[in-house]
Length: 210
Image (cartoon, rainbow, N blue to C red; front, side, top):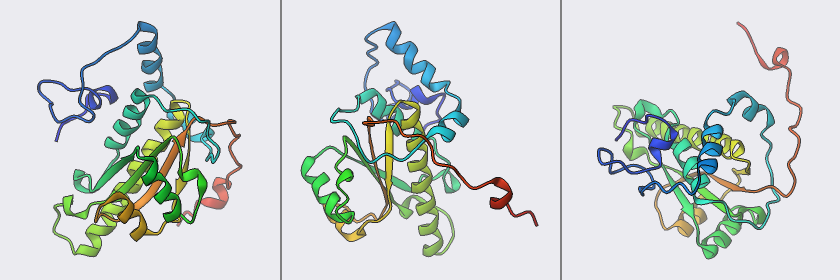
């Protein structure tokens, strides 16, 4: 376990934190590139939430490694039950596995996206004295929150995403080669067209004060 100082501290290896996500030495190609990513970190989260829109059509363009790292680092900061992080993320690069995931997701073709992340529950990490069904619920919530954080981070980085909830859990597990139950598949990439956000319910209708 390690304590994040900022989002970048989750991305790069430090002598005191050898277990950090995607450990590697920093290699900033230019001051301008570094400034761009620093600006993303300072993005107004409310603007990100208001403007995010699900996208099913992606450009045939790879997502840069650094953006992937920032998305995964964002997932790592999501709140979890007891701080135990009862979830795992499968970063699917294999084109064959992506095809299998399309089949496992009711043949939704956009599952074969430039960037595919599968968020799975791992209740075994949640070291709390509760019945198994409660621990499973905690790990489902953990995985869901991590996926949501990743989705918002992706939008801040100029990407779009689609949340896949209609999945055959057994087929997803078989494709990934894991016994961990999937919570969701998050498909991401550069949008062919940036869509406008849909209207939402009014807060008067949505909120129930009792």
